[in-house]
Length: 482
View (cartoon, one colour):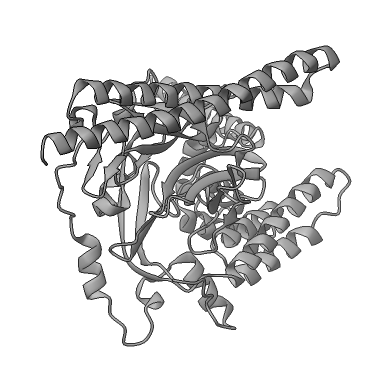
C-alpha cells in the first residue's frame, strides 16, 4: 500500500510540473502574440518562484510596461534582464526612459539594442526602433522648449468628476458634462463650454465617422440651435479626435485638445484664433511642455478675472484618474532658461511644483484665490440681446411693452433662424460644387446663386425690421413715460 501511495504522489508531482510547464509555455506564446495582459499573471507567479531568472524578469517587465502597470517595477525587472544581455530589455528600457524624459539614458539603451540587431530577419525590429528613436528626438525638442510657468497646485480626481477642480468665475463662462446638457443614447466624452451670457455654447461630439469634432450653437428663444461645425478640416490637423473646447472672453481665442500625427500619446493641447474676415480659424499652435506630454492632456482653461489657469492630464495616473494642475498664465510665452538637461526634464515633467516657483517665492494668495468657490449669481434669462436705447436692452420677448413690437421681434428671430439655416445650406453646396461633375455643377451654381440672393434679402429684411421694432418700442416707452 505504501508503495502505491508513493507512486501516486510522484505521479501527481510529475503531472503538476508538466501542467506548470504547459502554463508557462502558453504564457510565452501569448507574449509573442502580444497578448500581454493574459500572459502577465503566469509570469508574475513564475517570477515569484524564481526572482533571479533573467528571462522571467524580461517577460514580466515587458508585460507590466505594455499593460500600463508599475513602470518603476518594470524598469527594475528589465535591468536584471539587461545584465544578462537579453536583447529586448534594452529596447523597452529605452522606451521607459523616453517617457520619463531621461534622454541620454534612452539613447544609450537604443544604441545598445541597435548594436544587437545583426541577425537576418531583424528588419522589422529595426524599423520599430527607428520609430521609437523619432519619438525620442521629438521629446528632446519639446523638453528643450519647456515653458516657464508657475504651477501652484495639483489635485488627482476621477475623470468623471474632474470639472469640480475648475473653479471658474461667472465672467469666464461655465463648464458642464455633455450628457448633462444634451440628451444622448450614448455616453459622450466631452464638455460643454457656455459663454458668460449663456447665448452661445461650444462642445464636441462624434461625427458620421465617429471622430469627435468641435461645434457651436446659439441660444434661440428657450433652446439652442443653429448648430455649426467650427472647422470642417479639423483645424488643419491631420489626425483623429478634436475635443474639450474653451473660449476666452474675447470670443476669438479657443483652446482645445486634439490627436494628430505629431501627438506622442493621445490628446495634445492647442490654441487657435477666429478670423472674422473669412469665418475660419487660424492654423492652431501646439502648446509647449509642461502643458503637453506623452500622455493625454486636455481642457486648458484660463480665468482672466482670477488670473488663474487649469489643465488636466492623465500622465503617471492610475486608470480612470486625471491630475488637474493650477498655474499662473504668462502674459507672453517665456521659456525655461537652463543648460541643465535634468532640470529641464524635471520642469517639463512637473516633477516638483515648488521647483517652478523660484527661490523664496510663495503663491499663497494666488492659491487661495484659485481655490475660492465663486458666488453663484442668479443668471438673468437671456434669449437674445436687443438694444432699444441707452437705457433699455431686452433679453427676452416678455421685455417688450406690447404685443405689436413683441410680434415684430419674433419675426426677426425667425428670419435669423432662416438665414442661419440657409447659410449652412450654401456652405454645404459650395463644398459639393468642387467635387461635382459638369452637369451637377450647373445645377449647384444656379441653386447657390438663388440662395445667396435670398441671404442678401434676409439681411436687408432683418435690418429693416429691427429698425422698425426699435422705433415702435421707443414710441411705446415714451407713451408709458418710463
